[in-house]
Image: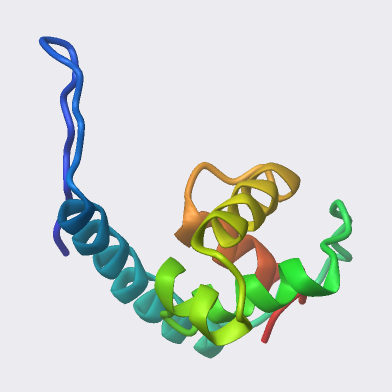
Length: 114
């Protein structure tokens, strides 16, 4: 497993579009791996309560779990990159997740996606 660490204490970090696409691709691969592991694990025995995701947010979360990048989701759903970024931000907030893989894991556990 690889990690990308960004230290911004000395000067602001301004990633290029290519860097952002690379990071997005890495997150997508991690999401695919996480999706595979979670689909093989058993669901929790207790009922889960969570903020309700809209149908579109569930759709975006499912595509994230399948390993789609933000750009690919936007193309697949005929929406802008910015709109998908906002959906992901809302999903993270509603699921109280720090990042995409954590949101995917929570969505699986709460049976919001399959």
